[in-house]
Every structure is written in structure tokens, then in C-alpha cells.
Length: 368
Image: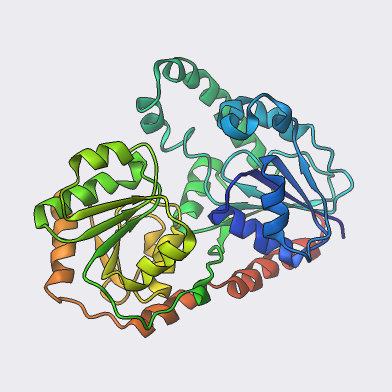
């Protein structure tokens, strides 16, 4: 069986790339197709067992593609449809940016692992446009309309959808009118030591962009005057530098060993954003840290209120403050060993067992 894996872009290693890497480990002879990528990083990440080839769409040949690839979003549907995949029996697309819109043989099986329908043309469209510059605000409504039409049509090219969370499954149902199976993405929980002595500081970790709400965390901790460490980079970094009190430490982007150290020592991770899944909370629990999370989206699949963390109902100052005070007052007691064991259900081997069961069922299903 000849296998193709289609991904959107690969210029850093994040959750989507961890999924693709795990899938390719099950199909080491697969060929990988990506709009634009850091080829050395891809080859290194896939490892020595990878025997396939890495191909790019024509997007990679456009000026400044590695830096400005998102500006070529309107051309990506066309680029996908230029890929000749007629030699492949199984196509697995990794969808967050455009990836699932490839054209396949009628008898080929196309499985889409969906990290998220494209948020900037669906449910986060208005937030995206509101925060964009004048040119984007003028042009993007027309581009987004066309992308929505294509995105919905290309969903019908998929034989079987797999969602990375219950939240994403509901969005697939809403926007594509398709059912999906939920298979949580792989998290390397064994990398973290949950036995270390915990400190007194709270941790906020991730990209510093608007919808992740690091600004809300800093605002609350300024009032409570509790120690907070913020690790990450993004458009809000300079604003947070201006508003953060002396109790808040802004570290910017840090290498994995520094992130790991802080996850293993923090009193709790504060996770205030609405995420499709959220790998960071699982890593925190693997490191023995409870999670204070916004109680919607992917956090509902990973954080058990009162047992592995505290869920707050609304993204408001008052709700987050009450959750932190509940932690400070010892309302809940969290066992690091229990947290670590809970995180182990998201390990790579669990992901592969569940995903491959779906692949085998789809490949061996009677042809209609």
C-alpha cells in the first residue's frame, strides 16, 4: 500500500508536527507533501527510520515563502490540487491550514486528521479581521469568502475525519456537516519529572497572541501580587512588558530544557485561552503541576475539575481570580503522581493504537 501524508507548513515543531511525525513512524515509507517547510528540520524530526520523500507545493518557490507563507494562503487550494497523488492508495491529511483539498483516485482512502477547521475563516474570522492592518481588512473578506466555499467543498473529498478533541469534532460537524472520531494528539509525557519540589510561582506558557489571553493572567496577578512567570513570544509581549508588575517575570521564548524546568517546579499552570486541544496542559500534568484552565474547548478533554486542575467558567477577571484564590487557599489538593498518570493516557503509543485502528477499519471497509 502506497501512502502519502499531506501537511500544511512545517517551519517549527509544534503539536501538528508531532502528530505528523507519529503518523509517519507508522508508515516510514510514506511520502510527505508540505506547502513550505524547513527540509532539514523535517528530516531530522522524522528520524533515521523515515524512508520516504519530502515534496513541496509550488508555494515553496514563491518569493519569501518561508517567512511570509501565510500571505500565500489564497493560492494554497490551487497548490494542493496540482499535486498528483494518483499513485497513492492511502492519503492522510493533517488539517489546520489547507491540506485536505488534494484530489485522489476514486478507490483511494483519504483520512483527514483535523487539528482545527481553519479558524481565521470560520469562528475566529471577526477577531482576525479586527486585529489586522488596513490592507488585510479590505481584502480578506473577499478571500475568506472564497476560502470558505472551497474549504466546505473540499471536506467532501475526505472519506473519514478524525478530530483532535471533542471541541474540534463539534466544529467539524458545524462547519463541514461531517461526523468524526476523536483521537487525542500525542504528548511525550515521559519526558517530565513529576517528583521535583514545587516552587511558589505560577506559570503562563504559550504564544503571546490575543485569543490566548495572557493579558488577563497578568492583570489578575498584578492585583493579587503573586509570583508569575510568563514564557512565550508574540504580538502582546511589548504590551505585557508595559503592564506587568514587579511580581511578573517575562522570559520571552525559551528552549525546551527551560520550559521543562519551569513546568516541573511551578505551583500551577494558568491556561486561560480557548484552545482546540492544548498540549501544554497535558505536559504540565505530566510534570506534576495542576492546571487552572478556562473551562471550554480542548481543556474539557484534558483537565478534570478538582482532580487534575481547576476550571473557571468565563474569561473574566473575577472568574480567573476566584480560581487562583481557590488554589491559594488550598481548596483542592493535587497529587503529582495522579497528575502524571492522568497525562500518560495521551502518550504516543495510545495515539497510534487508536489512530491505526481507524486507518485499518477505513482501508478494509467494503467499497461502496
